[in-house]
Structures are given as C-alpha cells and as structure tokens.
Amino acid sequence: MIRVVLVEDHILVRSGIRHLLEARGPIRVVGEAGSGREALALLERLEADLAILDVSLPDCTGIDLCRTLKARFPNLRLLALSMHEDPEYVRGFLQAGGEGYVSKAAVDHELVDAVLAVARGERYLNPSLAMRLAMEMVQGEVQEESLSPREEEVLRLLAQGLSHKEVAERLAISEKTVATYRERGMEKLGLRTRSDLLRYAVRRGWLSG
Image (cartoon, rainbow, N blue to C red; front, side):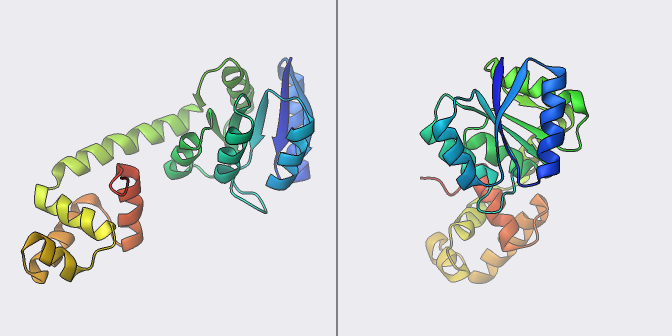
C-alpha cells in the first residue's frame, strides 16, 4: 500500500483527489495539509511514501516546499499536481528534487499512473507536459545555436547584471555596438524584456559559477 500525503489548499480538491486515488489503486491517503507549514508538521509525525504537492500554496511555492521536504525527508517521493503547465514550473519542480509533475487538466487515470510510477522510483510527466517540455528544449537549442559568439557573449554579460557601458569596456567595443548585438540576439531568441533574458539565462546556466 502506497501511503500518500496531500498538500493542497482547497478542501474540495483534496477530497476529490483522495477519492480518486483510493478508488483506483493500492493507495491510502494518510494525511492532508493546506499549506507548507502544515505539511512539514504532518510529515514529522506521519510515515508516508509520497507527497502530492500543489505548486501554489498560501505560505510558499510548491517548488520551495519540494526543496525543503527533500532536505528533511530524503526518502519521501514528491509529485506535483498543478494548474500551471508552463515548462518553467515543471523544470523548477524537478530541479528542486521532485520525481513527477501532473497537470490538473490531465485525465483522471494519469494521476494514478503518476503515483504508481513515482512510488516505483520512476520519474513521471503526463504526456502533454512531456511534449511541451521536449518542444521547448528543442526550440531553445535551435535558438541558441543561431546566436553568433559575440551576440551570446553580450547577452551573457547583460544577464549577469553588467550595464551597456561595462559590457562595452569589457569587450573593447562601443556602447552602440553592444546595443546592436543585444537587439539582434534578443530578436533571434524571441525575447522582449530583461526578465525574459534573465529567465533564459537561468535556463541555460549562464548565471552559474
């Protein structure tokens, strides 16, 4: 029997998930929590194999809670069940230590499949999310390859917080040339704002180290 804790702030949603899981698989919901704080307190006193986390909670994000739970309960397996289908959320949860991610728009049996797979030690993404994540990765690789070495260099430095003047001094080029490389690179990557650039930089590991 797979012992599951539900972490979701809507009581009716928790009730529906509990009924679905216990009706369709060798699963028992041993506890429920409506916030990150409640989840931590609950898991300190309960024995659970797996926790299902909403990504949006009243006192924290599911991604932050995932990271905290993995540090405190390394053997606990974590599955996200969320309305957010943006690949950034999926990637963030998996990088935080989660083993699976299911959209709330997925069909019922996919949640049961996910719980069974994660409990076996596997990773799980429902098919639509897996496809979106794969497509984004492919598009990102194609986009990055289209940058010239100087365009990438300029964007990396700008993402790291340098001003146009500082980038110009670092690369021994004019500020106008920096602006030109920035505009070309941003256009190739389909980015519009500094926030877009920062998200792209994080995804590509430009800010690490």
